[in-house]
Image (cartoon, rainbow, N blue to C red; front, side, top):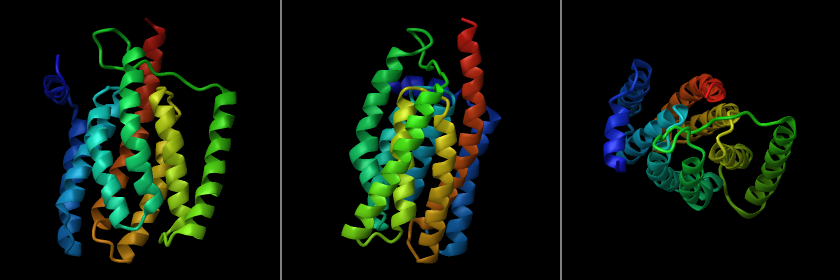
Length: 236
């Protein structure tokens, strides 16, 4: 089954909650754009791809990497145009190639050979400690680089967002449930980033803020869906 037919079949099984996320993002984005007088087709299209990416991710479906690739390319361009350089570099130099790595890795840990649903699992405490330590070290490093060598508008929040994003994408590739806790942290940080950018008059900021809030809703749901998947794994 090719990707197009797989996508059509998967979208046909979307729940009311999934449709709420999609329609909610589209509707809220249009309202915010009308109120602020700022509308960006690029943000709107990229946001739609990204919303589909996280919905499929919450279901443990490999198709999240297909939409993640398109969303990452568009998001990287938007971040660069907005002066948020660390996140721009993250999307283009890290997140784009990680979509291919993730597809390959999830392909090897599917529930069944014919399935596109991944086998989820929890990290052990040693892995969690390493995860937190690496994230903290990256925040310190990126903040120093951004403050010292760039004119980044928000060096601390940008450094925090990209550091959490790097670690989270790595954890996602290995299908650890803890990724959703990291996504929640990242969505909150990026929400703050886009509020500040919105106040500074950045054109894409309004829709990007809306997108982050729907990311946050989906990430909260993703925890429970992946816990359910993990329990079903143990029954096989």
